[in-house]
Image (cartoon, rainbow, N blue to C red; front, side):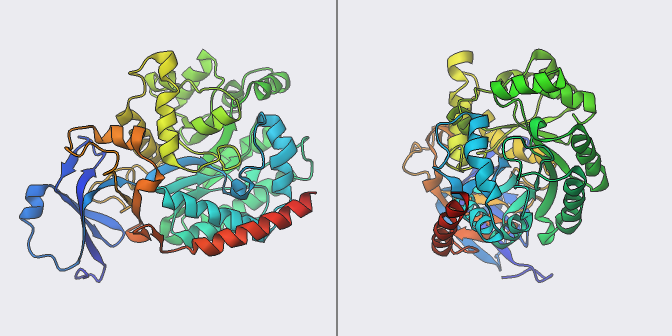
Length: 452
């Protein structure tokens, strides 16, 4: 069962492999050989037939489709237990009346429960990597939940040194920078490299110029560190940014020198033409969250225009308090559909959207050499799907169509991250979901008592 070096070898034999490699190969009757945490080989049917006797574990999955794990680049695990408690509000009301007071009431126990609940849902729906923005306090619970679940993640506490909506949920500029640097030193590269850090100033209206500048400068201290924030999400927010900064959101970022290739911007709905050009010129990344943008009434991001300019776009569910799902299948379907009434039915085809959910996420996070596709040498972050109910049984229909337009989380059968099964035959391996749900219920009730 192991190689000569002592690592475990597993041969996965699905019916179909969606590689997302440079040739966009879709292999039928092939196999993927996993050795330890990485993919040792991707075999065609002919190569599999010629393979010598295999001495490892063989996983027969002839009626399943193997895909790269989904990569969600904008998430708020701290909000998972707020699901259903902040509906039908626009962004700033949503923050002031619900989210900020709830986050301020978090304890270590409630934040742990929220993060674990979110991790369980993400894994169960095929997500293997996330970038998460936490709250102001208790970021250690996010790190612990990621480590326990087996997820691959970039994490970072929310940095806020201004908060006129909920003044208690902020901290002095120096404290925000100091604690962020301490956390980055502890967790950037932890959990065998699965855990990385992204500095996370919340958005323009909650951050001083000093905080934004110094937070981005900090990224130069840590290889591969990202700058993760919100931008141009809501028209009311846009007007407030103009009033305070005398320019639009991304123009302001550019004036501070923080619009760079490691700058990751959630939403980017209300952009002017110059800002789209700035994104392209600086190779900054856009984190598209269609469900959240629709539910909060924020708008529809100009994704086709961004993609025409070569801007890297990826997908995220945002938080369960504004979605209310953490399901990449839902984000893919909506990302494709919401552009078609404006740009025509050929806009945002299924293959392009699936690429956003895999390769686009990896490129955004700067880990395209490690994940995002099924290729030799990359990490074994893999998902087995049962699409028999929705995919043309003759196999002549597009697998991308089945994944983007017909797929859903119920089709996820098994999930592997870093070469280890974290979800197998629709059962969690690393997490006790029943216990997590029961704990989350208890912690939510206690949190609501603290708020009210």
